[in-house]
Image 1 (cartoon, one colour):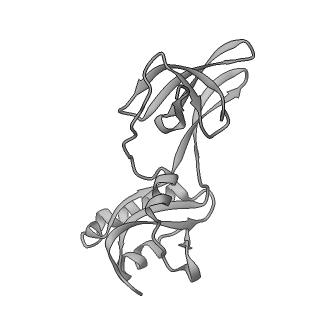
Image 2 (cartoon, helix red, strand yellow; image 1 turned 90 degrees about the horizontal axis):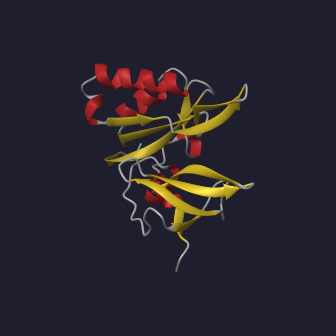
Length: 177
């Protein structure tokens, strides 16, 4: 096994519904094994906030973005591979023949694994256009910008009503060129 001495993000496949259990078990294994603390740094189950209507009420909840997958930031060695691979609920690494393949920088950004700084070219009161997602192409007015949480609230007009949308800073662009 070729060992990579730089920490990279890897994707591991788990039994569906075991993602959080795998994360917790792996974190405990790292915590209880000092040698692993220098090899495995972070374990994530990517989640997204969703708003559902239940019994006529808006309920905010979280759901897994990639069910059946867990992301691990680690230095690949035979020891770290063994610990991850033999964690209960893990079926293997994503890669050819189950061999770990690190995510590229572009993949890390697209998956939203690491926080990155976003430069915004709009401010409160500006007209913006939503890019990507369910509201792609909708225009609205910026109501609030939360740099710390990388979110922006945009008020769009939908079916004659003003509707606030909570979006990522990189999900909107200035509508004025």
